[in-house]
Image 1: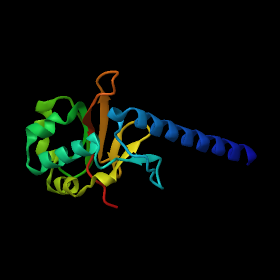
Image 2 (image 1 turned 60 degrees about the vertical axis):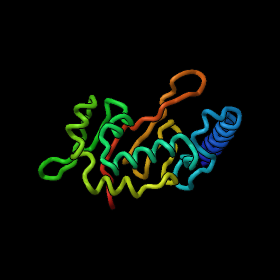
Image 3 (image 1 turned 90 degrees about the vertical axis):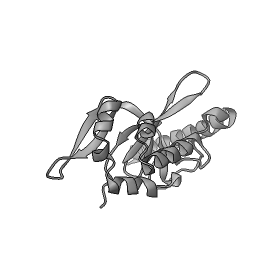
Image 4 (image 1 turned 120 degrees about the vertical axis):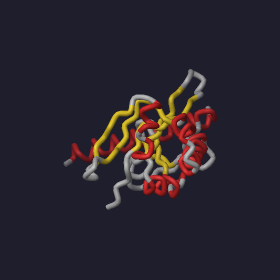
Length: 168
C-alpha cells in the first residue's frame, strides 16, 4: 500500500511538473501556444484556447463540412486516414483511406447527415488536447494533430481520424 501511494504521489508530482513546463514553454514561445492551461477533471487533457490556431482550424473544418465543400475538407486531412464506415447491415468497420481520390469516393459514407449535424454542434470548448499531442473531441470521433514544419515552432494542423459518434 505504501509503495502504491509513493508511486501515485511521484506520478502526480511529475504530472504537475510537466504542466508547469508546458505553461512556461507556452509563455516564452507564443507561436506554440495551442492550448490554455485548464485541466479537465475527468481526463489528463488540456482544453483548447478559444483563440488558438486549433480553434480556427476546427471552425474551418465545421464550415467546410456544413457547406459540403469537399475540396476544403480534403485539404484538412492527413493521409492516410482511418475512418469508420458502415456495411449494408449497418455494422461499423474501419478503413484506411490512402489518398484524396479515395476519400472523395467515400465522402458521402463518411459524412452522412447525422455526422454532419454532430460536427456542426461541437464547440471548441469540447476539444481536448491530449498528453500525446493530439487534439480530440469527446470519444475521439475527430482526432486532430499539429505537424511541426520546422524548429521555429511553426506547424500545420490536420485531421488524422474520423469515427462515427457513439451515442450511449
